[in-house]
Amino acid sequence: MKVYHGSYTKIDKIDLSKCEPRKDFGQGFYVTKFYKQAIIWANRKGRYHNTKGVVTEFTFFESVFNDKYYKTLQFNDYNDEWLDFVTLNRNFNTPLPSHDFDIVEGPVADDKITTRIDAYIRGEVSKTDNCLHGRVLGLNKNICIIYEGNTADELYNDFIDGIDHYLNDCKEDGIVPNKPYNGLVSINLPSETHFKVVTYAKSHGTSIDDFVNDLIEERLEAVC
Image (cartoon, rainbow, N blue to C red; front, side):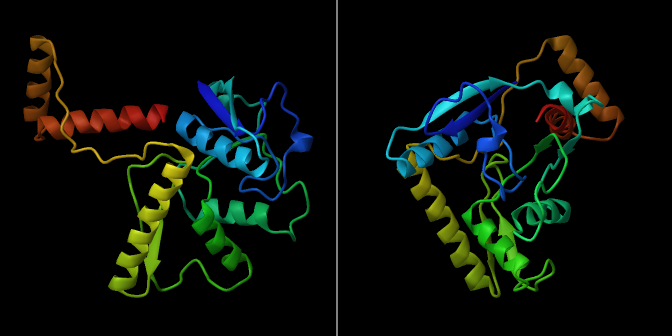
């Protein structure tokens, strides 16, 4: 699998000693399988160092997650376990190194989530704060738009602010924003396969749409 690292310079050799500590997953070399996200990282790093950002490509073998030689950790979504791990790494009271995992995969926090985590570390909010909240779906793991509020109006206004912030970031970084899809997909099947799909769906009391959707979801779970 191709993965990408965005920085202000090309990376010829990974040197973990030059990586900053207190990041979401601790001190380490961060990559993404989404090229657009790497461009965003590179542009931001480039602006900070008054130079042009650079994206470096690497090959990552996903088989390492099944290799007993490596100690790995994977998060499929933002959840309590993810929050506990990120808090552990970001907390300046945690001795370094903060963990002994070789490879960690999962979503990272944006500025808004980081602010919330910092407040959580300071004890200003809890995991079970009584507030309304939501998250925009359809974005990759490295991009998260959350919104929250104590009332429906606050929730809506925070949602609008989150979308505006995302669109402004895309504009500044020269990235085309993710756009919603209508969910309509036309698939051409051999007649024999089409017959098998219809027969299976009828015999299991489901629709062709639900049957195909379940197959796609299972496949995506295995590869994404």
